[in-house]
Length: 138
Figure 1 (cartoon, one colour):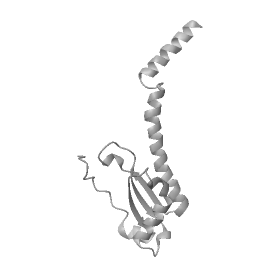
Figure 2 (tube, rainbow, N blue to C red):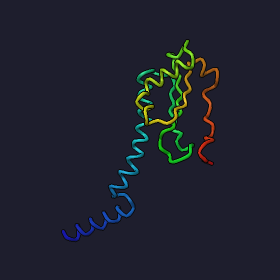
Figure 3 (cartoon, one colour):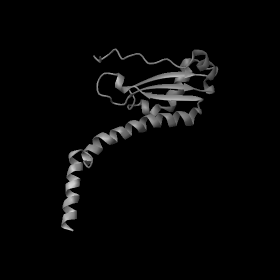
């Protein structure tokens, strides 16, 4: 039994050394990744529930901006017939209302591409985001 405990302790020490059994590592790194996935998934879920879009793409662009990747820059491409007959500002207000909680502190930047199916087909999709020009990011 002693050899089993010793072997178990040795394995735990090795796992801890490589951050595989380190609770601090999991709290600071893995939980941050889960929050990231949850924010992106949360945006997707809320927009899907509110609009039932024909096409929805939520892109996390935090890595393209200066400073630490705080998971606060998103680009949303949403194609939905709810936008038919509405001006661009009205479409953006519709999306902003759905994401009101996220926009009150969690999201720093939200690029919106709101189109009807006809507009999306006519334009051949949505444009790519330009590179960030601020904050000294290369």
